Structures are given as C-alpha cells and as structure tokens.
Length: 457
Ligand code: BES
Ligand code: ZN
Image (tube, rainbow, N blue to C red; front, side, top):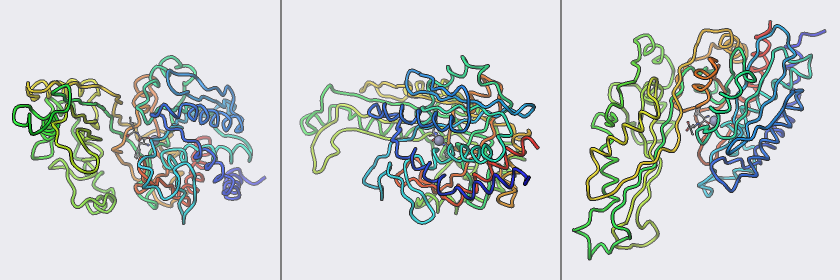
C-alpha cells in the first residue's frame, strides 16, 4: 500500500476543481455578521459549515445558538493515542461596501488570473475551507490521523462578543492539546509564516453634541462652539508630535521588546519600502523610534475608523452641526486590556473636552492581545509542514490584526494556538476586491495534509 502522505497529496492535486467549487459555494452566502439584514444568511452559513463537517465524518455536529450568531461544533475522536487539535474558524465576513469599487459582485465569486475574488475569500472562508479540504484528503485516503474538534463562530468580525461565555461553559467539550487557528496569513507567497502574537482591540464611539438642532452659521456662528471642530481637536490631541498616543497611562502596561526579539523582527523582509508599496501611501507615519514591523506588531496604536458630522451632500449648506461622531479604535499589545483603555479614553475626555459641548463615549467591543508559545509539538509540526511544501523555514511574525479567541483560549482553557493561514498582504481583507491567491491556497492545503500527518508520525 502506498503511504498515506503520497495518497492524500495525490487526492488533493486531483480534486483542485472540486475544492474550488466548494469554496465558491460558501462565498455565495453573504454572512455579514454586523448587519441585521443578513441574519438568515448567517444561519445559512452555519448550516453550510455543519453539513461540510458531517460530510467529513465528524460527530456531535451541532450549531449552538448564542444571543447573536450560532457557533458550530463537531468532533472526530477516533485516533487513539494521537493528539487532539481544536480547529478554530469564523464563517462571518465584514460588510462588502463600498460596492461600487468592486470589479465583480462581492458574493459572486469569480476567478481572474491566479486569484479568486469575493468577500471573505481570504478572511477567512478560504482558510477554513483549506483545513476542511486537507481533512477530506486524509479522510478518503486511509483516515484522519489525529483527533479533531472544530469551533467555528459567526461573530469574529464583530469582536466575538459571545465566544468567551461559550468557551467558559463548554470547557470539557473543548478540551484539547492545542488549537490550530488559520485566521492569519503569510508575509509573501514565497515566505511561509507562523504568527506568534496578535494585537488586541478596544473600539469606541464618541459623540460630541452642542445645540439640539443644526444652527444657521451666520446667525449663530461666533457664539456657539462647533461640535465638529471640537471633535476634530479632541481627536488631533490623541497623538503627540512623536506619533505617541496621549491617553493618560496608555503605555503603562505595554511590555517592552527585548533586544533579541527586536533583532529577530528585523530579519522579517518587510521594511519601509514594503509598507510603502503595500499601502500606496505617499509616506509612512508611526511612533518614532520603532521600525514598521515593530509599530504594527508590538506597539499599540489609535485610529479613527470613521467620522460623521454636518452637511456632506453635494453643494453647500451653511450650518453649525448639532453633533459630531467618530468611531475610534485602539490596537493593544500585552499587557493592555480593553477595559483599562476605555477608562484612559474617558479620563482624556474628562480632562480635555471643553464645557461648551456634551460628550458621550460608548464602548463597542474589545479583545485581549496575545503572545503564543513558539516551542511546542504543534508549532514544530506546522513549521515542518510549511518547510516541506515551500522548501523554506517559516518566518515567525507578530500580527497587527486581532483574533480575540486566541487570548480567550489561553486564559479560559489554558490552551495555546498554532496560528497560520495562507492569505497574502495584498488580499484586500475588509476592502473591495478581496481575493485569494489560488496557487498559494492549494499549497496551503498540501501543507495542512503534512501538518496533520506530522502530528502522528
Ligand atoms: N483575520 C483577521 C485578523 C488578521 C488580519 C490576521 C490580517 C492576519 C492578518 C480577523 O478576521 C479580523 O479582521 N479581526 C478583526 C477583529 C476585530 C473585529 C475584533 C480585526 O483585526 O479588525
Ligand atoms: Zn478573519
């Protein structure tokens, strides 16, 4: 009998077209977790996931209801003596707007060149499906060599508000040796990557209001403080001239980078030129004294995600707007917490907001940052698998994005995550024309086949 490694890789190579149509199926479901209009699409996507898990021989497949979107669970515990891997994914996606910037429909997946386009294809339906397809290749060529549990949520893109409760109340169900989280990506198509740190998030909405209605800016301009100007000044004051965030105490809990880690991060081939090219920005901006890799991976930041005030239609209108609103979020690093950053933001506003306006700060959602163990059998098996397929040792990187479940699993289950994925930096996640580089995706499926086999040699 030929060995299973060869057979499973052959299976994956023979079934590329089928794998692609399966991925397209789930991409057609507009599972936008933040929009109430997509509630039934969320159910549909959860059902799709449950059906796929059953087709892989998973047992106890169930969609658990939560106050918002279901969490899908399934398991295979038939590999006696082998480790148990908890596979995490999310089936929700970010909103597709602005729609007019898409070259094809966000929920009409289409291949152009080497890429498949569609909302969520890289973040992360393509990644979730890659794991399913690797497991399928093993399932049909002799059997799955490890025990698997799947935890697939539908609320990651809104901060996983119901996941901690679910994990806390299902500790036995989720018991495992380690988690595999394919919600991250690679630094380039020839640079296999393992993520070992993620930033956390603290998200706020800030409203500044003055008069109860918009006012004539000629009749009242000069006696009433303009809420849009106040908001702009408050926001402008949130950074100093060195690019540091000025919220009181913001850096108190920030863990310093060691010399060794700074040296290691310096080896990752993404320098200033790389960020200029990837972003198309005219010049880079950031906290003085840190490299771009450090600024995105190991330093906290504050950003405005959206602002709204006054008249923004075509033409002109002479008013003092009644109010102004901004969505503001901070990316956090260990050991900052969203709750503490909320208090810091409140203190900043208490100290800085003028008495001429009222303000209101709403805490939207948050997630803790995490640093993962880099030396365990799971990481080694994944690193070896990436090396087998790419012919190069993986880079270890700190990711600037957030995946709240990783910190939750550490604190609630005592479980470490192996974090990877096959998305590329120019995949346009959360943006128009999100894409997935198919040759990299197929390589990723093969790497996952090797990964699972490496865990039970
Ligand atoms: N998959 C991303 C996180 C990510 C982005 C990993 C880029 C690697 C590279 C994840 O789905 C995501 O976007 N998370 C949100 C979390 C938030 C809403 C709590 C994020 O980072 O904005
Ligand atoms: Zn994601």
